[in-house]
Image (cartoon, rainbow, N blue to C red; front, side, top):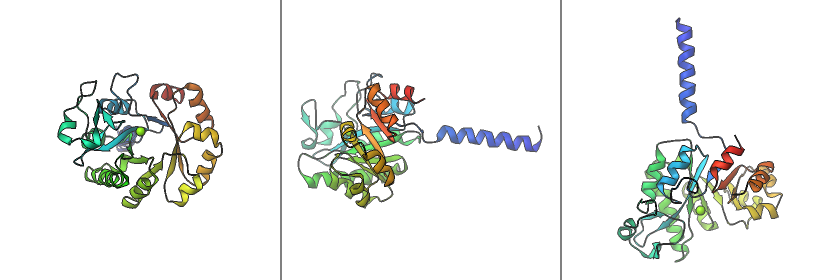
Length: 256
Ligand code: MG
């Protein structure tokens, strides 16, 4: 083999390596990870790992703060009757999920997603039931931990609390922040300096111009939680950027 052929071969191999490491290009965000068809518990590290294995564009998860300010991943404010915000990290760490994992800390969760670039970590900052101050403290701690673990480049933030979205954007201007609550127009989101809208499917169906208006404003659009094939097709036809779903396998199949 001559020198030129060797260089071409090396170039091709590098392309293959980079491609295998690159961000997935599909529209699929696994809602609370890929749990429904995999046997993993929602929001478990196992569910995140399945979403990564499926090569979803993103895997979404929800974050709360313990009484002693440690961050945990869970959807509800309570787990097995225990109120996360009113319980110590030590007690929370002992709680078992139904798939046998311990209730994951955000630190463990981010570390599990850290060594790959295909699947973005879509971090939802939950709204505290104990007041605005704690929501803001949770937001600040999430941003600090993402920075400490050096996962900023693969992490996006979402929140229902508008002030939390603004706070995250202020703390980490390069991060991608999307608002969840559905009560702001794309123009308002753009004016606030946020990056996109991540709204319930009913909001997008009621305001059919939102996807177009968001694009005109340079905003990203994401819709939740889209589980039927008819709704998936509706949003694919309407060219939404990302679809958050409990059925990532079905949506991946439809968009192959
Ligand atoms: Mg969520």
